[in-house]
Image (cartoon, rainbow over all chains, first blue to last red):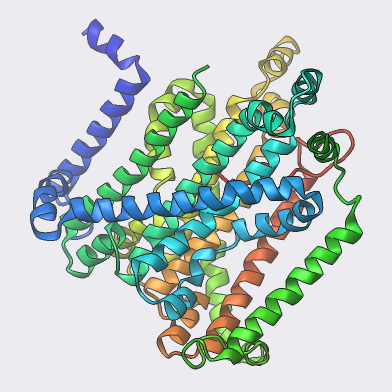
Length: 253
Length: 283
C-alpha cells in the first residue's frame, strides 16, 4: 500500500493514472447511461476501432500523408525563412519595414485564405504544402533576425580580437549564438504548419488525417471519429517529441 | 570589416531611427503588390475572375459594408467570439492558477496539456458538433476551446515564475491570504494573463471562423464560404479583407492593452520586438 502511494508521488505515473481513471469513469458513465454513447464513444470502443481504421480507411497511410506534407512544408519554410531572416538582419531598413507586418501576418487568420489558394492552385497536395509553409515560415524569419541581432557584443569582440574574416565570424560565432532563437522559430513554425495543413485537410475533405476525421464524422462512425482524432494528437506529439530530441541534440548542455 | 559594421549596426539599432527609409520601403512594397496584382488580373493567365481587378474588389468591399445582411452575420460572429472568449479565458485562467499553485499537478498534467495544446483544435469540431449541434452554441464552444489553451499556459507559467522572495516578504509582514493575493499574486500575474488574453482572442476569432466555414447558417465564415461555393470571387476577396481587418483590429487592441501592463518593458521604454511576442500555442 505504502509502495503504491510512493509510486503515485511520481508526476508521470500520477498523470498516467489520472488518464486511466478518467477513461474508466467515462466508460462506466456511458455504460450506466449517464453519458450518451451516440455523442461520446466508449474509450474501449475508440481503441477497438483502430484496427478497422487501418484495414478499411488506411489510417497509417493518412498519418504519413499528413506527416509528409508537414515535413515538406517545414523544410521549405526553413529553406526560405532562415535566409530571409538573415536578409532582414543584414538590411536593417528592410527588417524594420517588414518585422511589424510579419508579426501582424503571423497573428492573422491565414487559414481562411484557403478558398483563394484552392481557386488559384486547385485542390492538390501542393496547395496544402503551400498553405502550410507560409504560416510556418513567418516565425522562422522573425526569430532568425532576432537571434542574429541579439548576439552578445562580448562574443563579437572576441571574434574581432582574433581577426576573424566575416565568413568565419558568421559561422563560428553569430550562427551558433543565434541557433537557439532560430530553433525556437522552427519549433513554433512546425506547429503552425501542422495546424494549418490538418485544418485545410479537414475543411476541404482532402489529404490525410484531417480528411479522415471529417469522413468518420460524416459516416457517423463515432468510435472511428474519436480514434482518428487520437491519431492527429499522435502526429502533433511525434512532432513535439522529435523537435525536443533535435533541440537537445543541438544543445546538449 | 563590413560584416562587423553590420553587426554593430544591428545590435545597436534603435527602431525608428531610419524611419524615412522604412516608410519608403513600405510604400514601395504596397505599390509593387498592387501593380503585380492588377497585372495578374489583366493578364488572362488565370481563369476569368479568379484574380479580380483591384477596382472590382474595392467595389465589392463597399457593397459588403453597405449590405444589411453583412451586419447580421457580423453580429452572429461577434456573439460567438465574445461568449467563447469569455468562457475559454476564464476557465483557462482558473486552471492556470490551479496548475501554477501546485507544481506536482502541473508536472502531472503538463505532457497531456502540451499534447492537446499543440494539436490542431479543428479536429475536435466533430465532437463539439455532436455535443452542441451545428448552431451558434458549437461555434461558441469551439471559440472557448481555442481560447482556453493560451490562457492556461501563460497563467500557469506566470504563477510558477513569481519571485519566491516576494512571497517570503509577504509572509514576514504576516499578510493575510487575501492581502497576499491582492498585493503580490495579482500584480505579478497581470502581465502573463494579459498576454494569454491577447493570444486567446486571436485564436478564438480563428477558431470561430473555421467552425463557421465547416458547418453553420450564419456568421462571417459562413458568408465567406457561401461566396466561394457560388464562385463570387470579388465578394470572397472582399470578405477575406474585411475579416483580416477585423482580426488585425482585435490584435491591435489587445496588443495596446498588453503594452499597458507590459512588465518586460525596459527602462528606456523600448517596444518588444515582434519575435518576442510570437505565440507558441497554435490555434
